[in-house]
Every structure is written in C-alpha cells, then in structure tokens.
Length: 168
Image (cartoon, rainbow, N blue to C red; front, side, top):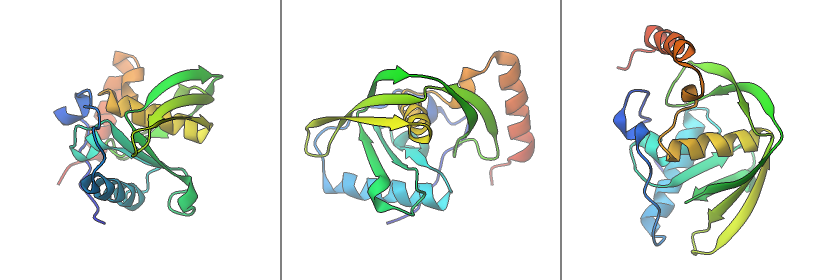
C-alpha cells in the first residue's frame, strides 16, 4: 500500500466527469488499497480517484477512519437513485485542506453500486455515510462541495483557502 498525493482545488483533473470502471483487475485492487491508505493518512472519511489524479468512477469511504475494517466501502460506477430528508452540517474536503463549511445534504441516500465481480447492489447510507456518498459521487462528476455556494461565498472561501494553504 502507498499513500498517494492528493490534488488540490484548481487542478483541472478535479473538474472532469470520471470514466466508468471496466473489468476489475489486480491493479484496481492495489489502487483501492492505496486510496484507503491515503484517506487514512490525510484523516479523511473518503477519497475519490480524481482526487489522486485518476479519472475513474471509483471512490472509497470508511466512516470509522480505519477503526473498523467492516465499514470500508468501495464505490464503483455509483449512482444515487434516491434521497430522503435533510441534514445540515460541516463538510470538508481533502482537496481543499483547511476549509470546512456548513452544507445541506440528504439525511439518507440509496446508491446503485457495481461490485468488483460486475454484479450490482443497492447500498443505503444515513447521516455521515449519506453525506460521504454525496460528496464522493460529486467528485466523480467533477464537482467540489464549494460549488454549492453562491459566487460571493465561494470567493470568500477561495480567498481564505489561498491565504492559509500554500502548496509546496
């Protein structure tokens, strides 16, 4: 396993629609392991492939932050099929370090997800997991959470980000 470099706000790779994952390979197993390792090292709940510069419809989520291996979820070509309720709370992003903003998300979501064997499943997430599903699937569609805010608020966030975060 290896920790990969996380690309940050402004990188054009974060703005692309991801390409669907085809046949599952041992290289994808390694990529998923690296993604979980990277999310853990960066103290994140999830990570989408575009965040490490890979244009694939693939993301990982672990709401236990490495404490419970049974909570690891791999999203492959996921699609939100239903949403229910509303939650309002703070959200951050590994690609926008140091920034957390309050954002409205669904309280519960149902996701159609492909398994590595090619079959499909429907998985449900509530509260933090629902937020993580929405956040990571947004990444796979080329969208960052700050894009939910209006232009003035987005400019304020961007100035705050640029002031406090200087890439090496």
